[in-house]
Length: 122
Image (cartoon, rainbow, N blue to C red; front, top):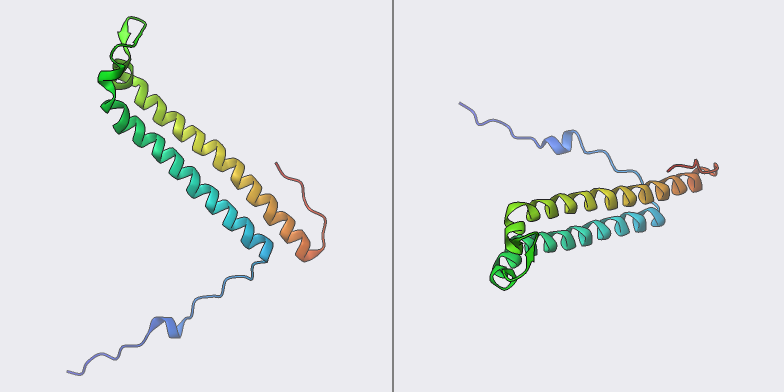
């Protein structure tokens, strides 16, 4: 029995080349992803502090009372979950703004390439 002949699939069907990107669009993408990574880092840090730092400080915060209950009760009962939901909402709102900025940069770049007037978006 003969060994099978191995051919590279990549040489038979090369991947299509991505379209050329202008320098302005490359800067817009870079700015978008830097913002995204910085936002994720900040929100993850806040989530970490809510998950690990606040429980470590529970004894120090036990003297504070809100509505007759000690403050660590609120963190354990619902506070942490509400903070996580707030972090998700903040991420959604800020990334939608960043998406709109990137779309405006894309539209402006497309209009610069074609010479047509820019279509106004949100």
